[in-house]
Length: 244
Image (spheres, rainbow, N blue to C red):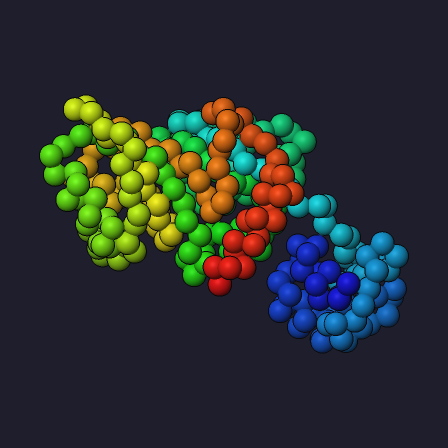
């Protein structure tokens, strides 16, 4: 493995900054300074140090899919003592500090991915990769709903001045009390669905994320989690490659 890649994967710093540390002679392999970022090392045999600190390989990344219930905070802790997503995980996983990919607010529920893979987290949350996120939204039925959905589909400007990309909408079912709609977005602004509906005077009764890229909840119950399968992880990574 290249030395700069090993340092980055160990979670010490970015690969670019690793290059700088190596070129400045601050990295040693078996007690000898190495100045070439592409120098090949064997993490299981070689002793790599930066200053006096020995750099060890990071544990294998974990990828968790959680069905977040309502009234749970998308945070690692909460000063107000409210239930957090970490309260839904065993200590054997929380000690590895997986971070949520994006957020779901207090009264929103559904699919939430947690991972220790910083690069994957960055790509899934950066708008340039345009990873689709689908929400099933229960909205109070009203006569103007079809025309308001068309505004979402064309793109709109929020009252805060942020421009929203066109969304995809699909009506699942409707009655005189409520309408179930799937709304797919690729931008992921903070509380985007709620703010879009607010500006269109639509009343949200329930908001649930049901898909992130190719990933779905399937039969996962609220409050439960599972590890991504190797197939799902590979599918997710292929989706990211195709979106560039």
